[in-house]
Every structure is written in structure tokens, then in C-alpha cells.
Image 1 (tube, rainbow, N blue to C red):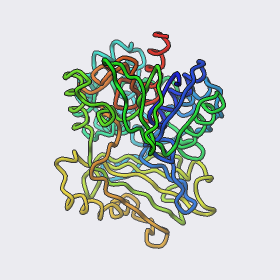
Image 2: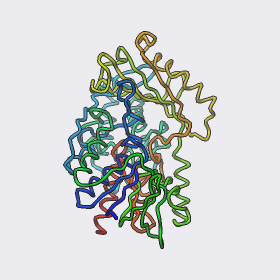
Image 3: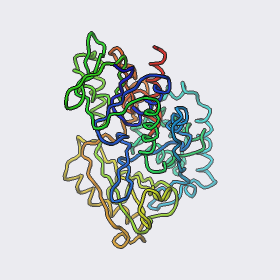
Image 4: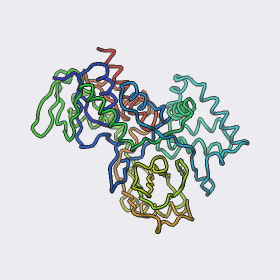
Length: 439
């Protein structure tokens, strides 16, 4: 018997476990993989530390994950801030500051910033089901300023079309950026550093973390969760509270659907179907950097594939993640919903991925400077939790308090705000607060 069982050692599960351990609960975390971090882990490939998945740490050292680490007394993780953005606009790659300048585009951006910075949370909530494109076009008629906002809203939502983006969600992220003064950051040692720090603290507080240990089943009696069956030997452990940080639809593999209300199942299945996008990953080991700035590259309409593209070099922020004298390039393209994408088309787009970079950086000698290159096709990949569309954000997502007694959820597929690594951490804080209120 333990006080709390946490299913999944991603950043949400570990944040929830650390906060509850700090509050005096006996916590046990179960992770099916040998690695911590879930979709925000870091793997060693030939002495390159490569993040699994495309992530950002919003607001750098002011991010929610850093605040949780500080609150629970865990080891601090150094986060290096981004200094600029490289934007592909009018067939040229330029710095964000060059695109905005000091004239009409700058005035338009400053005017919208001023409005955003004074909005209350309730005012942003009222815009959750409004598209960001409509909201911006009511306020901005300058082409450069529109592109500025749409480039950033793409990064915040992983959706290239601003007509698909929730205005409320995007505005809340802009508010975080304006208040902190920091766009985003990259953690020393990769994103696994956050999970390692939290895990160390959980164990120091008496909690246990079971790696390579799968949960087989969650036992429910009279609509109340009671215990779990886990491991190869089908061991049992009971708990007063179970927190699942799995994608919310994955819980139906552990608990039969008919234990939940019909409305809940239908909503979760709908969000599951809407959250899979096709993607093309890109990772390369380089002898010479593609660019030298501590910056992020964002493209809404690539010159060849005509898709969105994100690129950046984490080795520009810290040399600890690459072998001596080497550089790391990572990124990818999110192209369109998985169900409308054929394997033939995906392979065609993947073949063009190097050519896209050559178009953006025509003077870079790819053949000479690239040690190795991988661009895996991701035909059915959960890119960014539940996509941040109208009717799919904040209160429209499943609540962290489940319909079953003593079962809670956390992660970026359930109720929470923010983007990047902040989203799952904020949901974890909501779940912990609900548990503490009940206790």
C-alpha cells in the first residue's frame, strides 16, 4: 500500500510525484521504458545527446518546470535563453529584428503587445474558441507584423495555419513571454536534465521510481480505483490515489471504457483522432555549424515542400551535448493530418528535406560538413499533445480530476495551459492542487 501511484515518468508524472513527495505523501512512480522523460527525453547516440522530439522550454529559467524544481528543492538545471529568431520571409532568411524594424511593423507589433499584456485570464478564456488569424486580422493590416505573429503562433501550437489556432491559447503564451522577457531556452544536458533532477529529488524524499515496469491493469471497484497490476509477475499494489500521466486515451488500455461515462469516452476518442499528425524528423551531426546565433529557425512555407519547418542547433547553446569540434542540428516538419497522408508522399517530402536546408542556406557545403544525417518519417506520431485548436484547449480538454473516484490525470492531453514543456507541468500542478484540496 502506498499513498500515491503515478503512471508514467514523463515530465508531468515526475512533476506531480515530486510535488506530492514534498507535501509528505509516499509516492511510487512506474515507467514502462528504461528512460525517464517520456516524449521529452534525451538519448546518447555516438556521444551526441539528442532530444527525442521537438521541444521548447518557454520563458527559460522562468519556466514552470524550473519553478517546480526550485520549490521541491531539486538540483537546479541551467537553461540558456534564445537570443533571436531566424525567419524565412519573402524568400529570404532574416533575423526577426530585421523583419520588424522600427517603422509600421514595429508599431503594429507594439500595439498588439500592449493589448495582450493588459488582458485578464478571463478575457483570454473568452477567445479560446476564436481563431488566432481572425483575432490578429481585426487588429493588424501590416504584412510583416502579421507574419511575425503567425510565425510565433506556429511555434506555440505546432499548427502552421493560424486559422486552426486558438487565439486564447496563443495570447496566454505571448503573455508569458512578455512578462518574463524571455522567449524560450535550452537546458544544459538536454531535456532529460529536468526529469533527472526531479527523479533524484523524489527518491531523496523517500519515493520510489520503477523503470522498465509496465502497468498491466488498473483495478476499479464501484467506480473507484483501488490498485494496479504491474510487471512480468503481475504483482499488485494498492493506493489511495492514482495519477496517470499517459496520453488520456491510453488509459483505456488499463481501464475498460465501460467504466467511464459515455460522454467522457466520446470526447477522449475525438481528441485522440484529432491529435495525430504526420511528421518528418531531422537530426544531423555537423563539422561546421549551419549558423552561429543562439536562435531558432521557423518557416511557414518552405521553398520546396511548401510545408512548415523548424530548425535549431542546441550545440550553439551548450557544447556538453556534442563530441569535441562537432555540432548538432535538429528539427523537423509537421505536414498534415496523418489520415490524409500517404507513405509515398511522406517519403517524397523526406527526400527533399536536405534540399530545403540548401535553399535556406545556399552557401553551406552540406556534403563536406555533414558527418551523418537522419530524417525519420513519423507516420503516426503524437507531436504536441492535444492540438491547440478552437474547442480543444483549456476547459475543452478532459479535466485532471477523472470521472472515477481517486483517479487523476496530468500531461499535455488534459486540462492545462501553456506550450512546450510548461503545458504538462501546469496540468500536473492542477492535479496536485486537486489532491491537496481533497486531503
